[in-house]
Length: 445
Image (cartoon, rainbow, N blue to C red; front, side):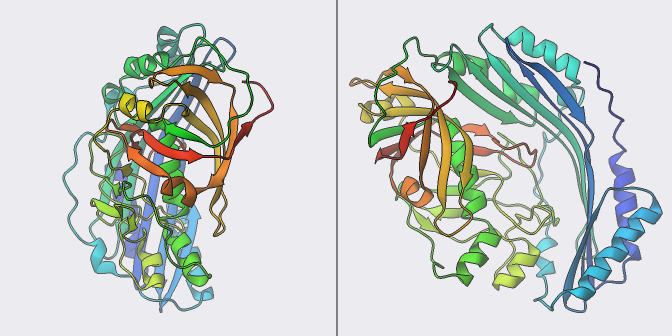
């Protein structure tokens, strides 16, 4: 398969055009978010061989005009199209209700120095070359999924210096062995060297099971959550609980307070950590910094962009996502002191959940979740991993799950389970008290 994508414009060119548009704006405050990129994805297995590529680009103009906020979105284009987007944002502001002013001074600080955001090897990837690389890695029973991107990202503003970066991102997901006894591992990095594809593959292979148990459905059992599954849960928690929009909705409802988490759980946003997908500024142009959101089970606030912070009477936290919400995209479950084999010994008689797919969370206050648990293994009395189980349906409440965490592992895995290049979760294994909600699932393993 041959896919040709156009070369990206120079970062300096995007900066010049975005700044020119800001200068044309008569609004009290203006930001222009401009993104152009190349992205691709490939799957390699005995049954599926697929590759695709594209060139996404977007423009967002957001203004403050006479105490009102207006937004317009478009694709970057010629001068007339850019000016049309600015006029649309101004018109939108005139139609909105008055709202509190942005805390513009908070977005004006200096960016932390951050290297390694762009990798020429990732930028040079093309579908055919990626397929060949995966074929060289894959065994007959492996399914490998690789997604990669290169992005020019610019935030120009009337109230802070222009922010500009060229980013690359690459994610590998490896499922190896005969299903349903397959092993699973995944990782995300800004560079191919940091990804370590052979290391990811080896981790998945080490988790393969030779025996499958088709016995009765498990009742409440101790659970060992693999780092990749924990990363998926951290991402769901970030977007459903820590987002500024969800905080405002809870404040407007009857359950304004945060729910309790286990005391061993600390959640820290680490946007400047080299491992994973670091990023020095948010999509409002606000500098990113380390921030604790949960400390030893206790909430330390939510994530806000400029608009949501003003509505909440709070301060921006540098987590704007370029839309109508904000959440931590670099959330880390702070590691503990035990390695995964130690956690397994203390979860003897339970199950290890290797991956979570189709994870969804109720947007209402119940925060109920549903997911498909795969790469499930029984944990023997001595803590070794035993027979595999077919995929299970798992449902419950995020509050119950995070309150049941009894111990946090030591080794972190950096992985973004969603298709975005703006960050990565960092998570270790989690040992949970006995939980129910697991049931047999119809369908193929």
